[in-house]
Length: 252
Image (cartoon, rainbow, N blue to C red):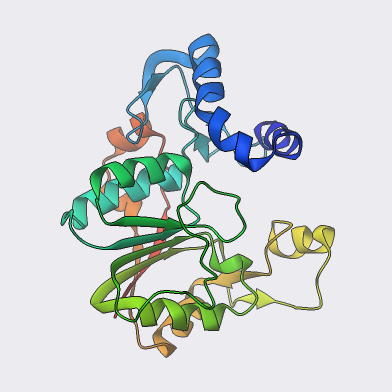
């Protein structure tokens, strides 16, 4: 239901107005329906009666009724503030959720966000396959649920390596399947991509080992981490974080 309502809303409301009214609209819905003290979002710090299931099919991924954050956003916030504490580091995030953008921007003075398709609230509009940034610019790059949208993901990974500083970290998350990565560039319609890859604008679905090998081919030291394991069961329940939030941490 949430995904359907969101699709209708985004078709009716232009992005430039969406960015303005979204916080107010969420606040109204929160105060009218969801205000409570059963659970809490670790990003916006609001307390609510419950999180909102993203869909009937995917009831495990829960949305904060106040800021709209997902499980992966809340898990990432935990991880960043635990392991990347230098507030002066240069940070670049691609297609950030609005809640994370606002949080990281308030905590890290040198945080920059980018979204090429104007789907997310961001400061820049970088083409991830041809990033208009000097070599060795960033200490940390966050690339959550982006590469599965990119036709030439190898070119994107090469660019991410180029702009990352020596010993810097690239953190990637993508949808995963068992076995090898599946892609077929002859699949072009929305309906066929939804059936093949799980979403209308995805061009592949990655296998864990396949992506690890691809990242290593671009001279990254890669560690696959379930960042949920660093969060207690009590905190996962309170903050609505799923048991599996897999990231690829790539060190240059």
